Image 1 (cartoon, helix red, strand yellow):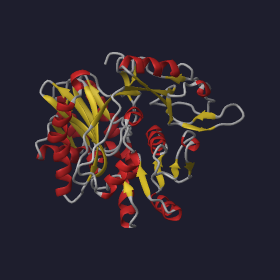
Image 2: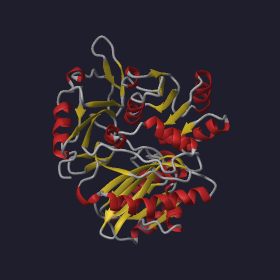
Image 3: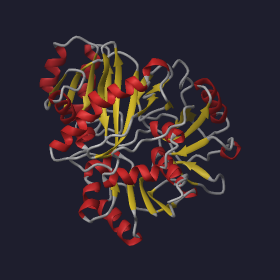
Length: 422
């Protein structure tokens, strides 16, 4: 089969890497891709949000399945355009992708179905949100309603912090249109996990889970990022067959039914960000795709043919189909450009990639093909993700960091505590 992966981040490199292992994949294209995907697939210079360009590419190349990696093209309706043209596509429609692209839509849907989640109030005006925050005890959470590349959620320990967060989002427009509407939400307490399953419009596979690290600094300090690392599966009582059944039957399946009944059947990967509270799992947010960096630690554990899973999802054939996972742990550490998630420089040579152990997966995110100085150059905030598997979480962690330390580029930065206190 001829398969097209849309996107240029670490998640898309991991998806392409896993699809390339399928005996059914004859040729693999990535649009636009990065320097890592260029080594395992044919990169094509079409942007992930260029809907007509992607459609034209799929038609010219006679693509058998298109896999949409990031949330932005899904929210823009790229899956709809492919379906209208009769082209197989993995990823939800624009209406179904509202589960991520509008946090207020997701919150209302959850509350209508009794899905456990935190209380929230929705505001379209800074004045109304400001008055509410002044009357509400901190800590509270301020969330941009729209897509903000994983950075639109601000945990506020004081009322002043919350007012500042509102100003950043609604007045200073830090996240653009995404912050024109905000949710002021109850702060949930407990360990956080990401549970992800595949959906075909009606059926949900069993879920698998990971834990990711959003804040930039060690000890979960600093600004929120797109993700500084992750590990899978969660350890101990956080994730087992009983918890998986509870999350699937009380959270994921009711949401999938509600979307189908609303005329927006969900097909693709569905991600539930959960807080494991003293009262049980509660939803923080939904994402309409595989997580990043969760994909980089989950896909190395997936034993099932990813192409088969995605085809069945796209074609509505997941009933009775299950996934097989490696029981070992996988730890991923993200290397970023210094200054990320704020301003940073790019174009620096990357060294050390030729010294990585052969069974370690290095997924490229912000990289470009190099020049006379180096085969690879930095080209983004999150640059690389180093993923290692081990018989225990600590073994996987040690192997990941051992290889992280072999890689270098100017102003390189990474957290030192990924999976340390899990």
